[in-house]
Image 1 (cartoon, helix red, strand yellow):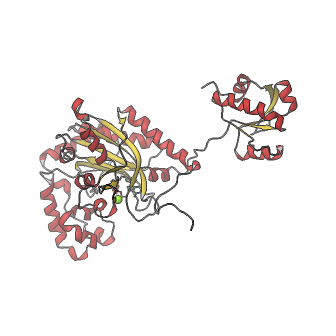
Image 2 (cartoon, protein in one colour):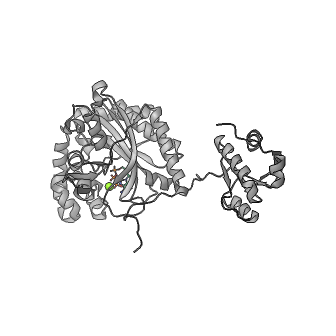
Image 3 (cartoon, rainbow, N blue to C red):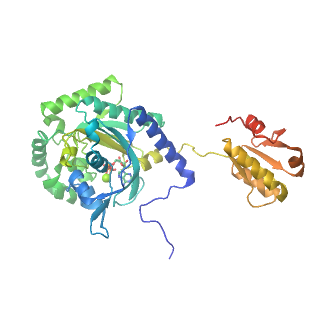
Length: 418
Ligand code: ATP
Ligand code: MG
């Protein structure tokens, strides 16, 4: 039987990886501009970390985790998201001892046992960023501005920013019971998931995509009407900072996030272009998470964005790159000259391809075309002897006779020493 990849896990092939590198490089540039440094944490963590942070009653922990018992009888889990591991490292490595304000970013694969479809996979990739140690809404606004700048730099006007506040441990319980009262009367019309979540996580019903649940929650009490004065003040200051920066956003009081640790500001970057996979990036404040994981009482805020979904949004952009020069040879005697020349040019930053197999000149030229090389040159006995050759610009066929030296070729091809 032929071996295939695990369901929902993708290969990113060379033609596609340029797009991924562009997304990753743009994120690094924008995040580092904002003072964030990269942290690399393991892909595997103890299962307990995710249960304690994401929450036992969430979709992720209930049904999506890749957990297994290793040979030492430990329960480990392939990370379903990045924040938990980053905060585990922040606490374990005492990053806060020197400065409670840490600005960290990460990128890499995440794993969730989901039903694979366009924009939803079992191994997928996130780029995320976190700021710890700042209570002030200034941090919320900087994170949101950074996210907005990232999407602008990547060349997208979609997706758009939606924000909400989920309150804190002071005001959310009261809202939760008000909402529960509202849902109780409509219980019969809710989907099975929402019925089940009614006791543990009723807020998720606001976010349920099942049409009946959407209909039943029209007119549900808004979390924004139930914020305590501290949360209310925080949310209005976040909005004021966004206004000050002319960052476009809308308020979506029905947005609830699928992870328990969020408090106050939550947000999503949403697009209408990917069907029900509408969230391209998402995040929020998590003021209780670090202490809940056994660390000091330090607040935090962050987000994660999905690379696959961003790659889909920029799939019309071209990222391929082509050789500068293809060196063809007439006979085997010139292959040493060609190889030596290629080596020198590669060391000078010129991208060169040559014939590897001693094929006919015709098939070598076909390959130069196929690779979309900008220039080609044929080295025969005469060229090898005189040290000069004719370089052909492939776009218009114009030939230029120059010496076979690195400098002359650099000058012609228009690339300076790198
Ligand atoms: P969704 O509502 O689409 O399931 P989510 O709320 O589970 O998203 P988060 O856990 O907040 O998503 O993750 C942040 C981002 O990671 C999402 O906005 C999305 O772009 C991406 N993402 C999440 N799950 C997947 C997946 N299974 N495949 C691809 N990308 C994903
Ligand atoms: Mg999900």
